[in-house]
Structure formats: structure tokens, C-alpha cells
Image (tube, rainbow, N blue to C red; front, top):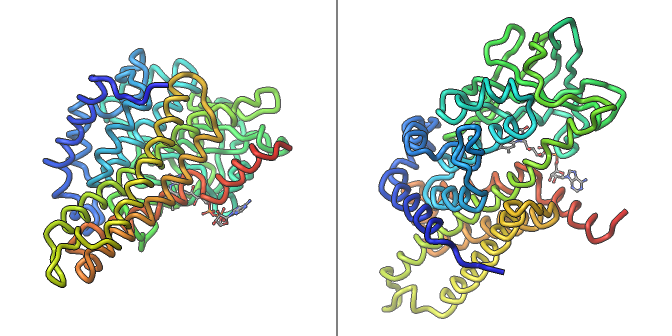
Amino acid sequence: MNFELTPQQIELRDAARKLSKEVFQDKAARWDREEEFPEENKKLLCELGYLGLSVAEEHGGSGLGLVDTYLVIEEIAKVDLATALIVHEQNVSPRIIATCAPKALQERLMPKFISGELECSIAWTEPEAGSDAASVTTTAVRDGDHYVVNGQKVFTTYGDRADLHLVYARFEPSKGAKGVGTLLVEQGSPGLAVHKIQHKMGVRGASENELFFDNVRVPIDNVVTMGSAENSKGFVQTLTIYNATRVGMGVMALGVAEGAFELARDYMMVRKQFGQRLADMQGLRWMMADMWIQIEAARGLCYRALSAIDAGKPDPCMSSVAKVYATEMAQQVVLNCQQMFGGYGYFGLLPLERMFRDVRMLTITGGTTQTQKNAIANHIFPR
Ligand SMILES: Cc1cc2nc3c(=O)[nH]c(=O)nc-3n(C[C@H](O)[C@H](O)[C@H](O)COP(=O)(O)OP(=O)(O)OC[C@H]3O[C@@H](n4cnc5c(N)ncnc54)[C@H](O)[C@@H]3O)c2cc1C
């Protein structure tokens, strides 16, 4: 068991830390305030080769492990979750295509994902199919050399700006989860309508959207995984990628918690009340010590789960454990750090208020805390 980072990993992490502090930190409030996608950050991340870090070299990616990739994302999340999410998302849908799609589709799309030319949203959740993700009712019905898609999606991140949507649809209505497959719907296809969801709480540099499919015709070449009774891989195959995505949510939460912790620590060393620094008050020192313990525990859980995936021995239960612990921990840590700033922490002039709103998302998306606990309990009590 080795807990040490390699010299290359330290170099990668430190470069991402420098970039985050020097370039991303000061602009983070703007994306939130203006509800604007951090386009210039994405451009820079692309130029520096941060998109597709975990995508295999044969597909034009960097071929790095998930541990390496999330060391970078953690550093960015310390200062700006909206920008960290760009790197995270650009490492999810391309990995699905690289792992599950037919070769022709991979060759057509992968170079464009890595160059940042193409973005792909993941359109899975529906109004009546949230945690129960296998119950999607959007249909894909064969008609000659096309599939005709009908249905509705909700909460699709980047649905308004993505060039492609990876849509989870029912290919064989009577086959349960086995009948669910995925296909790529191009933005602007006739019959596709996209509505941005308003009044979002946090991570306002990313948008969530409703997608409406009214007889949208999709060429058969755009099928990523076929949902059929004969090929049950269709639905299950893409789930292996979400195993890592789930831990990724945990790592981003870890980053936000660390960012908030550092701000609180620095403030406590200068703020004085009753003639002493906050950093010298025993009750507050213990709060900080408790948070330090929780942050270190989350780090251990997340990177252990990612190491297992990198080693080809994914442990879905560990991924759920890491996600639940890190995301719930981060909510509490950000709240406690905000408390250290007293009244000042309540206002948007400091990043704490934004961090509190941002981190809230991570216990919900990628599988809620409750559904992850169901998975953990199923591991404890096998059916
Ligand atoms: C900011 C944001 C971004 C998102 N991005 C995307 C995206 O890009 N693509 C996409 O497809 N989806 C996305 N989602 C959707 C997200 O995955 C779902 O919101 C999530 O899976 C929960 O589904 P739901 O909202 O329908 O809640 P529900 O499933 O209705 O759950 C409601 C509550 O009941 C609990 N619950 C449900 N079932 C059980 C159970 N069996 N036992 C105990 N408790 C249970 C849940 O934990 C939750 O607390 C996003 C959501 C958010 C908030």
C-alpha cells in the first residue's frame, strides 16, 4: 500500500494549483454573478492539455490515470467549482464514447472532444426518472437507417451549449433496464427544443436544461450502446464510467472544502476579538482540527477508490462510500468555515457564500446520498 504521490503527480498537482491561484481564483465570482460559462478558462484549459486527461492516448487524450486527473480537478475546485466541472465533464462523456461506442464513432468524435471543438452533455434524468434512472421513458424507435426519439429530459448540464447530447433512451420498451441504450443527438436537430432552467442555487457558471424530443431523427451511426435483450451491456457498460464520476464528485467536494478551510485559517490568524486572535481560541481551534481530520479522511477515501479503478479493480461500494463521505463532509466544512467569518461570511463579497451554494449540488447529482447509502447497504446485506 503506497500513499505517496510520484514526483510527476506532484508536478502535475502543483502546476494546476499555480494556474488556479493565479488565473482562476479572481474570476470565479464573475461566472457566478453573471451566470456566465467560463469560456476563457475552458480555452486555456484546452490549450494546456487539461481536457481529456484521462482519455487514452490512442484517442488523442493524455492517457493519465484517474488519480492524476482528479489531482488537477481538486486544485481547480479549491477556487472555482464551475471551472473544475468543465475538466470533470470533458473527462466523462469522451470516456464513455472511447470505452463504449463503435470504432467509427470514436474515430469521428474523439479528436474533436480532446481539442475542445465538441462538447457533449449527458441527458439521462427525466421528470419521472431521477434516482430510479433505469425507468427512463424516452423512446428510440428504428425507422430505416434512423432512430426516432421521443421524450423529455431534465437537469441536463450544458444542454444549451453542448454540440451533442448523449441521450439515454428505451430501445426495447418491454425489456426493463436491458432495453435502455444511448445515442448521440445533435444540437439543432429538427424536433429538439432546449429550455434553460432558471433560478439555480449555485455553480452558476454551468447551466441545467430541459430537453424536449418530438420525433427527432437520429442516424443509426450515432448509436453508442444498443439497448436490447440480447445485448444487456448497453445500459450496464456506461455505468462503469459513472463509478469514477461518482468519486469525482467527492474529489470536487474535497477541493471546495479545502478552499474554504484555507480561507478560514488565514482569516483566523489575523482577526482579533477580546484581545486575541480567533486562531488562539480553543473552541475554534478544535473546530478547525475536526475539519482537518474530515478533509484528510475524505482524501484517503476518494483517492483509494480512484486508485482501485486505475488498477483495474473498481469497487463500486468504495466509490459510493467516498462520494457520500466527501460531499456530506464538504457541506458541513464550508458551513463551519463561513461561521469563522461571522457576519462577513454571510455576504457575497467573500467566496464562502458562493462556496456554500456551490457545494450543495454535489450531494445530489451523480447519485444522491440516499441512493449511495442504498448501494452501500446492499453490499452489507447482499440480496
Ligand atoms: C446541478 C445539477 C446538475 C445535474 N446534471 C445532470 C446531468 O448533466 N444529466 C442528468 O441526466 N442529470 C443531471 N442531474 C440530475 C440528478 O442526477 C438527479 O437530480 C438525481 O439523480 C436525483 O433525481 P431527482 O432529482 O429526480 O430526485 P428523486 O429521485 O425524486 O429523489 C428525491 C429524494 O428522494 C430520495 N430517494 C429517492 N429514491 C430513494 C430510495 N430508494 N431510498 C431512499 N431515498 C430515496 C433522494 O435521495 C432525494 O433525496 C443534475 C442535478 C443537479 C441538481
